[in-house]
Length: 297
Picture 1: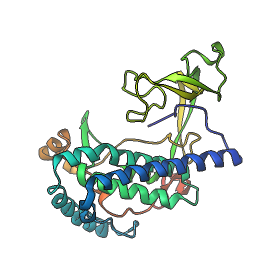
Picture 2 (picture 1 turned 180 degrees about the horizontal axis):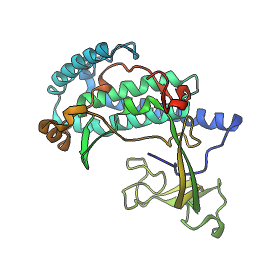
Picture 3 (picture 1 turned 135 degrees about the horizontal axis):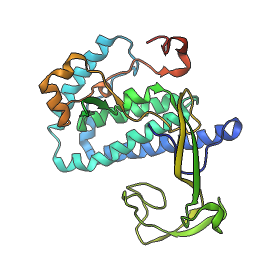
Picture 4 (picture 1 turned 45 degrees about the horizontal axis):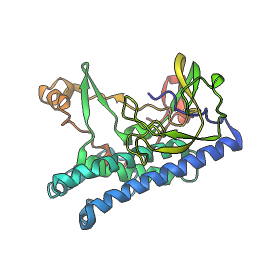
């Protein structure tokens, strides 16, 4: 699970929160669209030959969904075999960004008129990512794990946490109460990379900031030395991105098959949910919690 986001605590409610969600949701949608457009640009004329995403995006019939998934899996195998390795490698960071930004957009816009736009953006990007790079189901500590963007993003629930934390200034790294920077004001800051190769200005791995160059950056109070008190599952988390990002997968008796286990260990066992329509959102607000299970699942 992702429990917190870096940066200021999101507004708890009211018009200020609505504006916060609207702004960041639209921004994430644009980011996903731009990344997807870059994928199409890299494909050039071959983009017109790419397998098409099936519509409508929702199909309640399990057998119908699996039939479409099998068909699209075969189409993608044929298409991918006609692409050169250098093109596929160039596409990878952009399609992954398109997927993550689309999921982020839905997390912001789940109660917004643009929710279906975010829904379509997830399907569109995940469809290409699965077709070219797979959606691995992996074996760790004798359990199968998946981070399938379709399955996880359609589970509409999040995490609420109780924490004790210090807050450091994003400009100088000192505790907010010990520094002279005013939060929300803009100051010059030199771009560097941390131990995880993330930019010290925007926390991205791939971004427009050049190491050693100075940029004007807004001072923010970032959490550090977080001490977790408790965590609860909630329908609408205060931190919109505080969601389940990976979960175990029940593969039934197939999990005892040595060929299946070998495939999972070598990242060649894949989830096909990205290749076809979904069966709709599974929203925690619709669960019958008296039975500790979704009411319509």
